[in-house]
Image 1 (tube, helix red, strand yellow):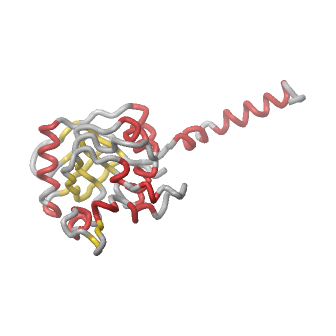
Image 2 (cartoon, rainbow, N blue to C red):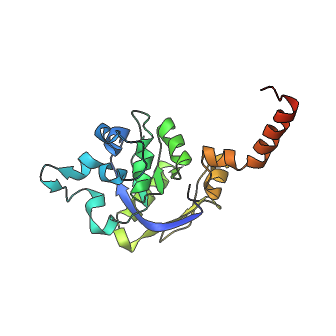
Image 3 (cartoon, one colour):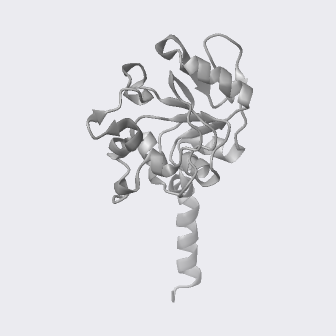
Length: 200
């Protein structure tokens, strides 16, 4: 998993509340367990209609096409607990989400896949949404080490993050990576078990 330390990017504003995981990536894209290629399905029904791209959807606008940060509405990621949702976001280059609240399972899945979900107050969210709506004229910097968001005009916004999840993101550790970081202990245990219980 790629480390998350500090990220500076244009932030795309997605004002809609209650965007569920089926809106993030429709069920028809869940036929694969590969984590690549899923950006094609990201927000598919919000981005496309029968005639092609919807020009009014924010990620279809050239200003936001390379955005790595999304400022999203309340209760983002609700609905079914599909891990493909953070996979699709990550495959599209999105590393950070900022909202007033996230669905719990989606929130945890983001951390396990290298996406940082940040929860802020409504007042702070309003400020960040205003920044995002200015497009290329206003980038955001998210610093996980100091737990701050820096906008173009005013002082930093502090955010809370679980210490363990922060450690894993800073070091690029998913669950498997964390387990493998103890490989020397695992090897020692297996060698000791061979000696102590050779009949197994």
